[in-house]
Length: 263
Ligand code: PEP
Ligand code: MN
Image (cartoon, rainbow, N blue to C red; front, side):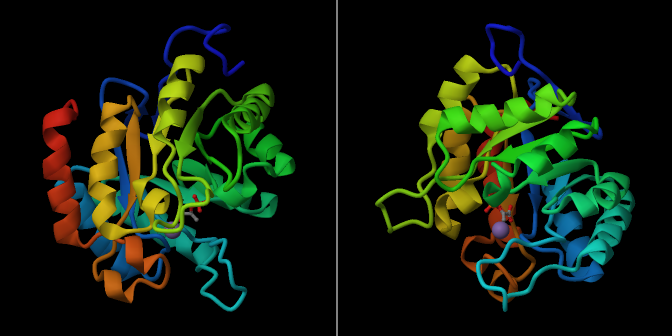
């Protein structure tokens, strides 16, 4: 169902007011984790001013260490819902457990399935039984075929509103956090009608590389980017090394402007 042989035209997934997969290059931005209402509000205001239309931020965080901040949970969803309305942004957050699906669906515009859950078939079927937009992130060591089959699970369960996300994979290279596989973007755009979003933040793990890779995402045919930013990157409770400051994000948007259709 996700193949172009079945459906030749590009699918456009409507995330609130943002048409992902259309002529308009989508910009999703926000902190790795929702830390507090004032943190999210401040971040939302500057990403909106710079031109983003979707606010990202995790309330349920898949942390490598069980002792790291795990997210604000449902409280975080409520904060995001409130902030999104106040600032005028659509919202996206990660769902890790089927038990939280109703809350995420109630408060948030789009559901993110994280890299660690790309092959959690119970979760894929559950989001497939809703009509919510889903951003499916590529697993840490998943092949493109496995990624497309994971997307197939969601569509086959009845939800056609799937966006694929290339967020870097594990390779022998250690200079960067992950290896952003832009081959995958061009390949998937050729084989599938689903929109493809690039995550240059997790793809590199390095703040200064986010901007060049976001521009590369435009060049290889991606439909948008999802970028982590923080009002004070040094103080970010998670993924601080890849967080863009407000000024960095503004610069990124200025650099992208010549390459993307204005909203
Ligand atoms: C995130 O978006 O903050 C995240 C945890 O991403 P990934 O699942 O790609 O690691
Ligand atoms: Mn993160």
